[in-house]
Amino acid sequence: MEKSEPSTYYRLTHHTADCGIEVWGDNPASLFENAGYALFDLVADIAVVTPVNEYPVQVSGMDVEDLMVSWLRELLDFWTCREILICDIRVMELSEQYVSARIRGEIYHPHIHSLRHDIKAVTYHQIQVIQTPEGKWRTSVVFDV
Image (cartoon, rainbow, N blue to C red; front, side, top):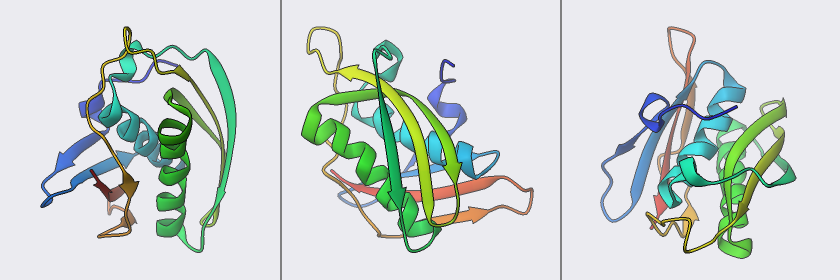
């Protein structure tokens, strides 16, 4: 499935010296998927990334906020350690302490991909994962840039 326009599932938030985002989803699985898309959309233009290779991802956390941070750190590791850009994310299993997913993407090619932000780390600063009164899900995350 091709990801919709980024402005439909996340927005940048103001944060001194760092980069914050607010992400939303219809359910917890879509929230985790959209947070991953937002992360990689900040790193590079994911519209030109091809889902060439597939990778399994399994992450655990003490609670849903810790799980979100661990999830995004694991995804960021694909970029910082392997130079892999992700363009397709499918959560297969999700609980408050565990997420399993299949992600797809390709190795960074400087003549194809344009980089946007150098995200160094996912922080716990102001981390929040909530269900809104309307039944939607929202998270706020701050990245060290």
